[in-house]
Amino acid sequence: MTHLSRRLALTLGLLGTVSGAGAIQLDIAATASSAASAQLRFGVREYQAGSFTLGAGLSTSGADLSATRALVLPGVGTARAQASAGVLWSGGLRGALNLSGTAGPVALTLGLNSWTAALERFDPLARWAEAAPDLRSRGFSAGVTARYRLRRDLLLNLDSTLGGQSSVLVGAEFRRDALSYRLGARVGQQVLAVSAGVSYVAESGLTVVADALYGSGTLGLSGSLELPDRLGDGSDLRLYVAYEPWRTVSEPLRYGVQANLSTGPGTLLLELRGGQSVSGQSGFGGRVQYTLPLGEDAEQP
Image (cartoon, rainbow, N blue to C red; front, side):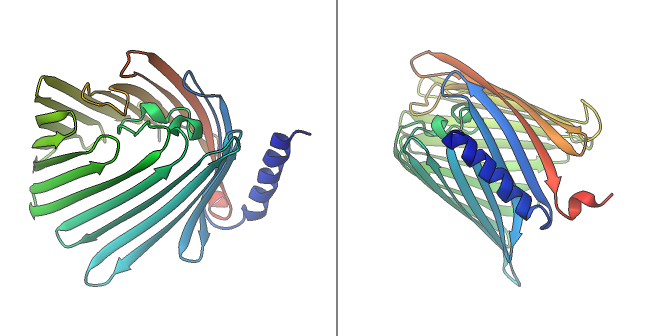
């Protein structure tokens, strides 16, 4: 038996020992892409250990762990902290810490990330994520987002990133019934532009989002479409595309489609992503994942 087979067998054994504890989710996923080696992963999520929610995974590439703690602060608001870490069998580490909280009209999020190996070695599809990732082979990044609600239908937003390509986006969002309108400006490395966007959310759950950024010889466009129940009851179909030619440490063009289908006792995820690098090289990949609920909650009707 190979070292990998032993690791996978050990993981399945561990999953069996925890399967009776609450609403645990078991993930089994196979991923392939033109940017990295194919990956097979087994993992668990939503394991309750006291006041923490834990997750763990073992794959042909490495192992990962996560821990989340949520708090309700009486008279103040809510807070949430999540820490995660990953290691590659071939050498490489990553770590992340995300803190978020709300207090009255204010919502804040802080994210810290550090890594010593390229992101696609941990997740073969990560380089084509909707939110542009930092694709440097090693580094550190930090991000802060803030939202202040002036009134029920008017918000002020800030989204800042410090890393391989630092930038700040400031803007306002006006909401009216099913529509939201956004106007702002982004300032940073290789970008100085104004932005505008609109979102539509129907009662059925249909969601359409479109944004544009223009300035300093740059035109960026992004959008997404979410269609619930179009592939059967409980299903969800989502498509996105982002064209951001000012990006230098991320793929300027990224796109993807994701379908979640209720299949048997669990959920089947089918995902395709692709994009084009700064140098013009195209790539793509896909993932098939099955999520099975375990434990007490899985036995309830």
